Image 1 (cartoon, rainbow, N blue to C red):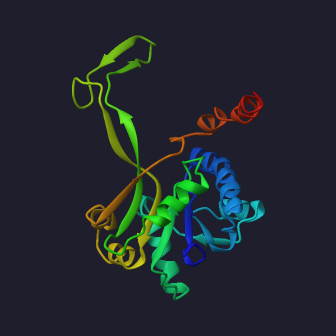
Image 2: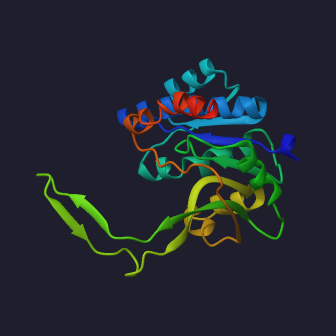
Length: 226
């Protein structure tokens, strides 16, 4: 089944900051896709032609340029590109995989977990992560410590959240989403099946966020030698 499922990764480049961050994050996506042997069935989506040239120079084989005329197009770039992929190539796989470029560390086991959970009774298969419901301390602009109220309750409980790191989406359902005026509204009212995220969860918003992980390789190698 794995060899028949296309994989899509959106690398937006509609702002300088987003371009820099996604260009750096794309390296992590490439290493993972190459390790899985999925290069020939992976498609990089972007609204930026330079980003797609960079993706090809990394070693990705397939790219999809998606013109974005406004903020709505940018927000729905994955929906539009996958719909055009279906029309342009007359491709109609039963399912496809959508990976988040903001998740730097996705393991083979986690990817296969998503595949194993595919079930035609559902429209979307996706992962969830645990997060702690806790008080948040933050700093004002003058670095004064402030105390924020509890997010949900007064108890420090563990709660599950959809982490948006990996989706298996039924193609017919994706087409249905695109034929509606608000694709996201239809999508989030689909039939979901969830499985636990066993990997390190990352939430990458900048190049600086990515650089924080640069030291991990050396530390892990040292730990493995103990």
